[in-house]
Image (cartoon, rainbow, N blue to C red; front, side, top):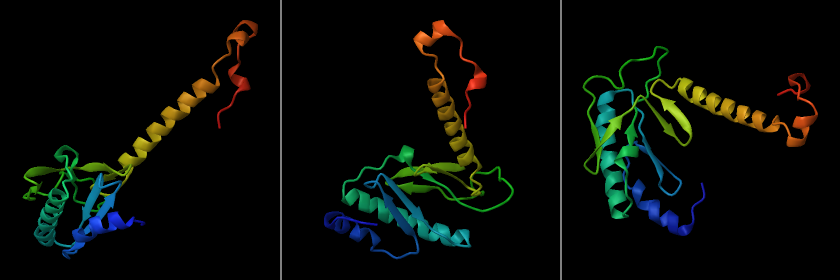
Length: 163
């Protein structure tokens, strides 16, 4: 990752704490993520709120506004079975700058839809739907009859193929 000297000094102080929580900053801080991996829920909810508080303090220090409506929390738990619960019962609420961060079953991050079970079915379905839409749009535009050709003869569907 390349940073200009001014950006490097700008983000240097954000990694001042070491709790095992990883931070990812993308696109001028527009897409920020905190990641923490642990085998126990107790460890997660001991370290993650502290890291969220530190990040909130850093945002406030540098006057970066956070939109709570675009903030979300997701707990990844790989399982072949799809859980009906968004999070396990008795999961504590997370807050940043006095705004509640909602727990989500899935979340679109940097164009990839991540679901709590890491199945990617929702992402694949969304990408497939978009691809089919654009293929159909391109097909319609490429097979639109020309005004002069309209009067001459109709276009046969057998003479065209879509690969």
